[in-house]
Image (cartoon, rainbow, N blue to C red; front, side):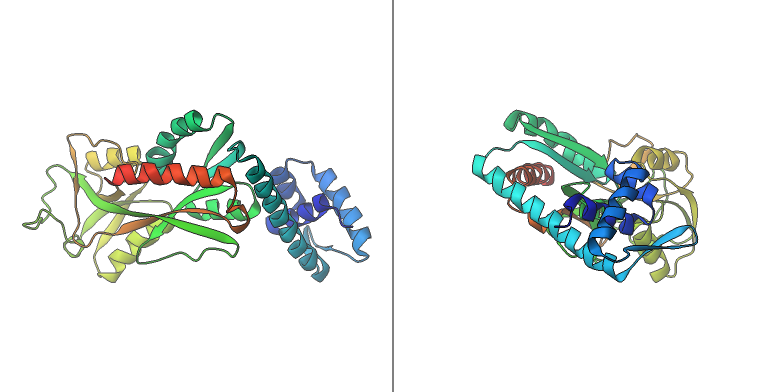
Length: 302
């Protein structure tokens, strides 16, 4: 029989591209990974990796074994779910990844509740972008991910992942309190009226893609005057008069007196989702944490 450990190591090398990166991901040494692959190649009776220059390239045999490794990981998780169901206990480690504002607005409030309800559960949190979060989920590095996309631009989830939609997070315009922008009688600002402004943008990703697409679609003149990924940085830049920006409501801190949040006409909204692997659907730990996050979301929405 092929060693599951060897199969998982091969899968990590193929996905990461190098022995060193795979070793770092698995918490092993590059030498240990190399020895495992040598044994796996002997068991397969044909090469699984070939060297091209300084890189290693997977063979057709490696593609077959990587598919087997994915099935092994799914079986392992399904078995763990079945064992947890036998005890009906919410316990053990549960790794959660999330984008920053959901860490503030969802996970930070839910962790004390989980400690009280399930003292044997050991949750850990890892802050990642939605794209990196889904990749980590597929690789088995986390068990549950909080991600977002835009309601008019849904991301395509990788095969084997199950999404659970929480709801929509409304985005406002933030500007200096004496902004001088055109505001409608309903107190809302129209994106079409925001030409000729300086903006604070995110690093490339879901949020930045939407902002730039919206500006281009409306043929608006604009300048990206700053790039910042954290709310405090964006708020400080807006307060200083350097730019205006878009900011979702989830996890948003209180604004200083010098900055206002202006609702938009037909505002962009983020779709907030919880995502887990198909094979972990019946895990009591996963279902319990999902339930509590849903409660925090519902309370915040109210």
